Each structure stands twice: as C-alpha cells, then as structure tokens.
Amino acid sequence: MDKKHQLKLGGLRRGAVYALLGFWALMVLFPFYWMLLTSVKSYGSYNAEYVPKLFTLSPTLQNYADAFRAVPLGRYFLNTIVFTVITTGIMLVVTVLAAFAFARLNFRGKDLAFTVFLSLMMIPNELVVITNYVTIANAELRNTFLGLILPSVTSVFYIYLLKENFSQIPDELYYAAKVDGTSDLKYLWKVMIPICQPTIVTVTILKVIECWNSYVWPRLVTTNPNHFLVSNGIQEIRENGFGRENIPAMMAAVVVISLPLIVLFLIFHKKIMAGVARGGTKG
Image (cartoon, rainbow, N blue to C red; front, top):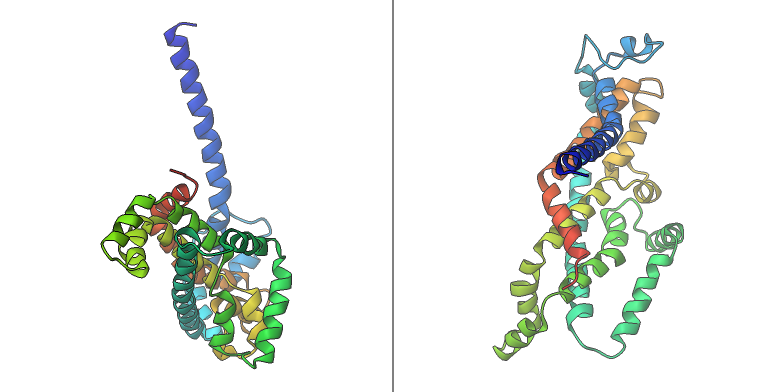
C-alpha cells in the first residue's frame, strides 16, 4: 500500500473516530439541552405539545422566578454551601493526614491496617447508611448540621488516591528534609502538598460535587425545612411547591441547582483530568 492510500485510510479512521465522539457527545449533552429548553417553556405551551418540540419560539423566564417563590430555594442554597464548605474542609484535613501516615510514616502493622482499611470499600453503602443513621439518631443529632456533616468527613477512596500520589514522591526528598531538621507536618505542607496539588484539587472538586448532590442522607436525617439542602429542595418543590404536573417550573429549579456544578467543572476540568491521570501513574 503506497503512502497516498495510507494517508487516505488514516483520514477515514480519524473521521470515523470523530463521528463516533460527536455522536456520543450529542447523546451526553442532549439531556442538559432538554432540561434547559423545558425550563424556558410556559406551562401552557408545554402541556399543549402532544409531540415534544426541540425548540420554542416564545421562551420565558417566569419559571425561574416561580422556583424561588414556591419554596425558600435561597435558604436551601445557603444551607448547601455551608454543608459543602465545612464537610469538604474537614474531609481534606482528615484525608491528607491519613494518606500521609500510610504513605510516609513507618509503624507496626501499617500494611495490615491499610489492607483492612481498603476492605471497608467492599461494605455496601446501604449498610453504612443504616449504621450512620442509628448512630446519629442515638446521639440526637437529627435536624442539625453536625448530623449532616459527620458521616461525610472521610473517604476510603480519597485516602487511597492521595496515598498513591504521596508514595510517588522520592524518598530522598524526605530524608533530606529530616536531615535539615524539618518536621513531618512541615514536610507535608511544604513539599508533598504542593507536588500533589492537582490530585488534591481533584479530590476537593469531587467532594464538592458529592456534597452538592447528596440526597439520601439529608432526606434521612432532616425533616425540618430549615436544614434542607438543594437536593431536598427539588423534592420539596415537587411535593409542596408546583406539584407533579408543572414540569417546566421543576426543570427551572433543576437548572438553577445544577448551574454551580457545571460552572465548577468547566473551570477546573483540566485540573480534574490532570489529577486523575497522576493518580494512575507510577514513578
């Protein structure tokens, strides 16, 4: 096969790959487009569509105004921000210190302890939720921010991810720092955290998304609307706000709630990919 045919074949392969990627991107993005489109349709025009339309000639923002009037959505946003910031901050402290201990410190039974620790990932989430609920209920922490936050301040997976990153840092840096009289915490703060910053940023963003989307646990431990998160707000809007028929207003609320996460991902998507790639690289 001559060079001309090879170039032609390579172009056809690239074209096929781009076509498949474009089709996949369309499949992924279409639900977001449909959500946004539905949110700008009036209640009457939406119900008048016997066959769903992929566009609208009379968009309206009334649904967004109704979303904030039907339920105290602003309060739910504030509750979610407080819950997310505090939970993520505590989780980072716990996770970084635990990962540092497993990666750098030497103590008896470390490998066995880490193996047992990883085995916790095999426990079904349903059992963990039940155990956490009984613990929080017995401590009388239902309908409190403390009850919301405590079960989410650590993660076996994030500790494992950071531990693998910390283990990639050459031992010579640690020994040189100890010769200079550097403490373990100072070495962690000055050397390990800056080197592993992409992964730490990734863990932070993933935890923020996890907290923002948290639904099952807040529904279990909060019955007071003063402690509802935005995930609870969606259910509250459906049950006591618009009802089950006003789909455009529901979609407007979903757009408002989803927008911060979409913006966050668009801003930090490169760091997320860099952190994940680093977590899977050795040496």
